[in-house]
Length: 70
Image (tube, rainbow, N blue to C red; front, top):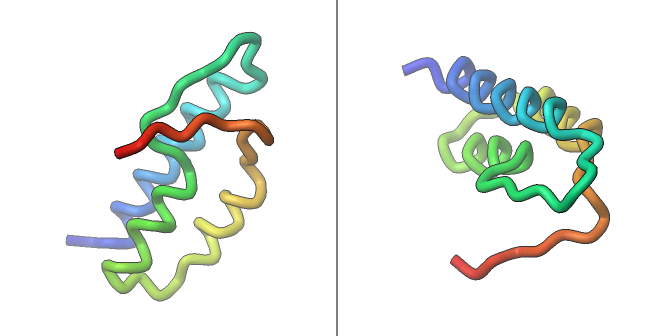
């Protein structure tokens, strides 16, 4: 399995969702987000994560968010 390619696909899917729903005219729910890709990449040992970190800085969510318990 190509871990980097998988992370790139996850990231691109999250960016596509973000761009389709930004700016939101009403509260918007998302099950996953761009930072989730970074949270996945670290434990699988993906050493080159700058492309994900850059996306996390570029695509910012609203300053007020609701987090549901797991």
